[in-house]
Amino acid sequence: MGELTDEAGKEFDADFKINGYLANAMRHIQAHIRTKYPESFAIADELNKLGQAFYVDSTELLTGRYSHDPLCVAIQLIPRALSAYQASILSAERGMHVEALTLARSIYETAFWLGFLHKSPDAAKNTLFAETIRQELEVYRLSIEIVKDNAEHLAETRSRMSELGKELKKYPNPSIKMSDLADKGGFGNRYTEYRMLCGKAAHVSVQSTIHYLNRQDDGSFNGHIIGPDEDAVPEIFAFACGAIIMVIEAMRWLTKDTSRDSEFQALMARYAETMVPTDAVT
Image (cartoon, rainbow, N blue to C red; front, side, top):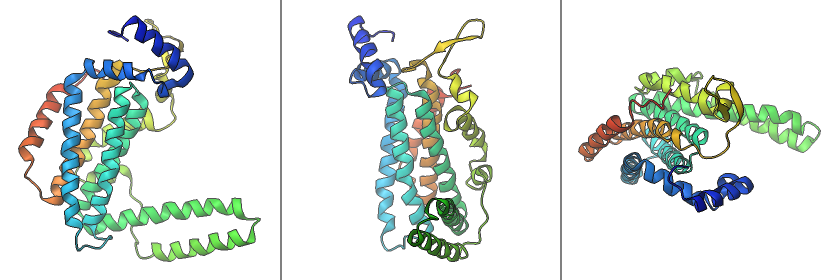
């Protein structure tokens, strides 16, 4: 692991074989990776603080509004993005490449919804509610096979499905594809990045397994690579920080809060200079 001392390296190797990423010796890796990419972590930490500040201030806008108000729905989505972002940075510290990118993908989805809620509040809210009800209905449909031999549970399941069916009629919005959601949210130019993450991390695919294979100079594979990937950290930052920037941009639109614009612009400039483009993103 580069500058790790021999003693720390041996401790890590032994601990990782037993505990994987839960190894206590991961502390050596975290310190090493943070030292290797100081500017990237500095930008990531500042973006996190900015996002947190936007969110904390935005909660004041909830006063006097109903939970189904589009702005309230949007604000309730923000912690989802922030926690995923924070988890992706924690994963980056540990060299957890695929795991961090999976989290980054969820931030893209949230950013798309936030943008849609800003540009078309009622349509976005109704579409989101309809999607949620459809997903719950599908779970109940699948569970019928599980409870079919229990009359009481079967009756409860069918009753709940009936209630959800009636609720869905209040939101006659069709299902929306992620590409359309990105367009409606004002982030259509970022959809390609989202699709890249689907193959790299989110779904089981040949591409997602290549990360764990040891590639030889001739392009062939020989064995597996299990453990922290410090060289993948730039790619994690490119996606995760780029995604949270979209979320912060959407928060600016939604809250009309421009008080942090100079700080935000400076961070975006540092991000562009430090993380984009990067040879690690392929």
